[in-house]
Length: 399
Image 1 (cartoon, rainbow, N blue to C red):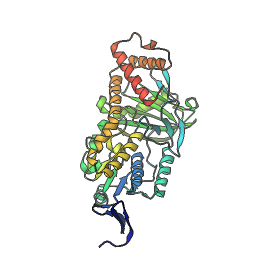
Image 2: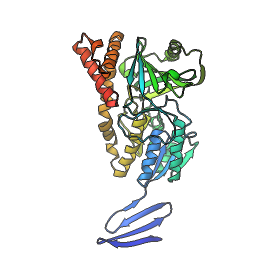
Image 3: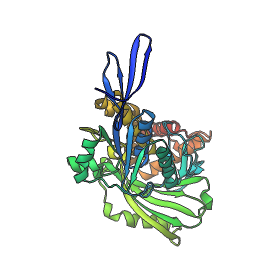
Image 4: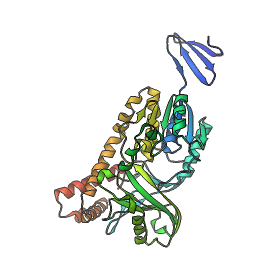
């Protein structure tokens, strides 16, 4: 017989009793089912894990958040924060500046206005730590220094109703179930330095460079006037072969071409930006989210918005008891955007460098209200590519 009755009420013709059992709150409604408070474990305190933990708390779940180091310790990205789907709230801490323009460099340089975009440069460590502290205040059990391995993965699955794997790439789950080889060919490969130099000329702006020598792009994302993330990314093998062994040499060439070879190198990092959704996202009582699910942009490698969205949707699927529809739901939201980016990349890699140059010049001219003179004479193929670029640019909020 259940003990420790906390409340007994009769309302609207229904009798409601609330009981407390060790470690759980159970509610039983007369004529209904016995439901226990769900326990979820979240692996990884990155954007996907933090979003899942936040959604779990909001839905009254018992949440444990497991991070292999300290929150904010293993950040290897350029720290851009783009939200084209408008699914994110601005960080309470860690905003460095709103990006007002992007300078595209091909043969020449073309500056485009991004004031209408939801695009910022952040201090990811400060932002993620602030979020984690708030989650702890809301009752999340945060455990730093908890590395999940094959040996403790099984016991974790037994202890919790659901596990959300936001451990990044390759995901812990991928080693257990043998699909870790999926990530490399379907990811952007990146190499990056944090450089100390004079970046005041890029104030409130970022720079993206294109090259004839590799399928990918180069970037400069300033953190302030004297420090910037300077890196290079190769597109995934879905768009053609690549030679990863030369990526650091290519980065050095780009740095030299930008006149930054005399700057001081403060840090070096590299890694994968998984750019293709995995065919299966639910493994028994484990759900993949964020990078673990392959949700970064195939075009620019950004994944904060998609990570947050997937973390929320994973918990929502658990709450609804419809985890079998989780991947379908994500694709309904993200598929149109990923499809548009995929087509844009295919136009890009099938174009000659001179054509890319004309497209950038034409888009810049059009956005300034100066017509499409640089695109003339205008072939049907070039018109189609220019229209596709403009369509994507407007979806991002560019003007």
